[in-house]
Image (cartoon, rainbow, N blue to C red; front, side, top):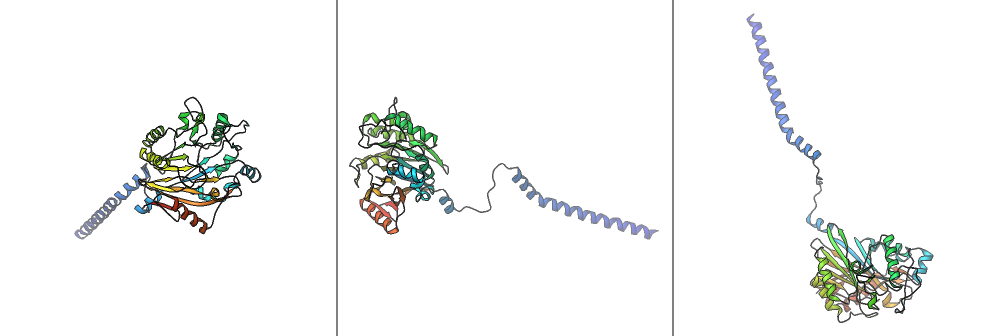
Length: 376
C-alpha cells in the first residue's frame, strides 16, 4: 500500500514540474513576440506612408530635386510654316526637337503672331502675321506649357485679334503671359509648383509699335516695359510669393548680336528687384549671356521657328535651359539647333561647338563650355 502511494505521489510531482516548465516557456515565448506584434499592428493602422528599405543618399536626393526649365525664342506660325502645317500636319515643324523640349519639367516660348481669322490689319505695322487656330496644338504637342504674348505682333489685327488669340489659347488649355484683356491680366504672373517649389513667370515687351498697344485697366494689350519702375514693382511683388521668378523680355535691336546700352543695367535692376533669371528674344539672332550676382541673363535666344526665308544667323536657334538645384542655384545651358525647311532640325557636334564658341565671344564675362554657361 505504501508503495502504491509513493508511486502516485511521484507521478503528481513529475506532472506538476512539467506543467510549470511548459507554462514558463509559453510565457517567455509570448513576451518575446509582443514587440513585433505591436509593430505590425502599428504599420497596419498607421495613416502615414512607411519608408522603403532603400535609403536615399544626400547625393541622390539632390539630383532628384533638380528642376529643368526650357525656353525657346520666337515662334512664327505664318507664311511657309502655315503652309507646311496645312500639308504635313501641326506636329511637322517640331518633329526633331520635341524630345529635347519634353525632357524639361516645364517649357516656355514666345508666340510671335496672333491666332485669328480677321482681315483688318493694324497699318502701323510693316509686317502683319497671323496663324490658324489648330497651329497652337502643334506647339502644345511639342511640349510647351506656356507662351508669352508680350511682343510687337500680338495686336497685328488690333485688339480683336488679341482677344481671338486668348480665346483659342484658352480652348487649347495653353496658358499665356505678357498680354491680356486688361493690364491686370497682362501683368499677371503664371505660377507653377514643381517638386514642391513655387516658380513664377512674368513677361514684358520693350518693343511695341504704338502706345495704344499697351494694356490698361480699361482695354486689352501687352504688358509694356517702357515704364521700368512698374516692372520692378511687379517683380518685387511676385517674388515675395515664390521661390523662383523668371522674367521673359521682348526687346533689343533686330539683327544685332549685342544688346542695346540700356538692356544690361535694366536686366541687372530686374534681378536686384527679385528676378532669378532674365530670358530675352526679339532681335531674331542669338546674343550672348551674362551672370550677375549668380543669376543668369540671356540677351537673345533668337528665333525658334520661322518661315523658310530665314538664313544664316537668323536661322541659328536652340533651347535655353535653366537647371535649378535644391538650394535654388541656377545653371544655364544652351543646346543649338537650326531652322531649315519650316522645321527645327539638329546639327552636328562641330556646328554646335562653333555656335558655343561664338556665343562665348559675344558674352559678358561668361564661359560657354559644351553648352554649359558660367560666369567668371
